Length: 445
Image 1: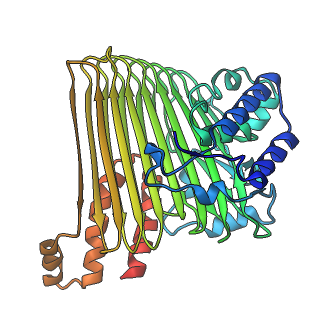
Image 2: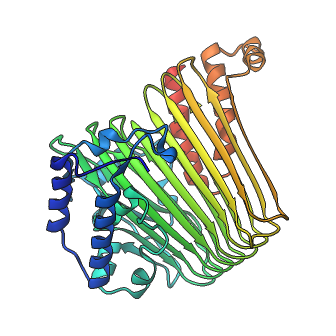
């Protein structure tokens, strides 16, 4: 495995080591997890572009930068967030809202709404300090850092994050929103390590919208990990939206674990950032499990977005659907690597994977690599990938009806994206994304 040895650049490694030793280690189980994770990180180093899974994404800028911790407080944060609200988006429609600044919970900007009895959500740091048994049971049990440097790094610096637990038989209307805000204050590069833990009780049903934004245009590094446990016959919809500034580096990981007859839906939308890598690993660990993964990235300029997904069918009668789309303009670069694994015991698996990409310029670049690993013999699995440009006949048709060329391009581009957006069930989240995309494409018209 080709890696970038963090110890080769002593200044960078020493900065991580100092920060690790200065943080409060918490209870023994967490202190041990942090120490083990830091040791794994020091041993692994950062992956290099010579590593097969990172061949198209170069993280050397992250590996060679010394970062500082971000501020825990910003004057007028709640007012600043309200100014970012888009027309037509009703934030009050969310079931609840948890806000984090540079990875730290901000109670004054958060709202727990009127949730059903038994629902628990809030700061991981507060729950860890209180000795919460559910957090101790689940935290760090699904996203392993033994062979993943960025997961190990996140766990080593795990200080705070969002916790959501919905008890058995409980349904929630409206999405629970988790908002991670990054600001570098004085302008020096900052690194934050947000964590999210979602625990869905048996027969529960709810959705979570996890968003990342920047308050300034300075360089930042966000290394985020989300773990989702879906118990028997539960249903969870998770939407992850990246809207950070064009100087931001973002590495994200979502790890889901499903029990029998459960349903998990993931939507990953990447709109911002300079260098973005999103890793999604879904483990279908029960019979009759259903999983849907959808993704959309709409990028331009010199943005780089890499989506790496694994659908791991571990038990029989599992069904998975994966639909990822990319829209690239300017000199943007997109990567999709989708891997479906069907284990020997996972007979009667039904898996379909599709990756489609739209190039709006001659300078954009896309790499697509769908993969199947099948160890069972009674399965139905298909995959495919396409890359193309806007249909000239469709463009001509719209122009012939009196629509300007730029506006026609915007309409056709939105129609390409609508297939993914239309799969998001929460109306408020869907409208938010539609507003963002319309604003972007109309600005170019």
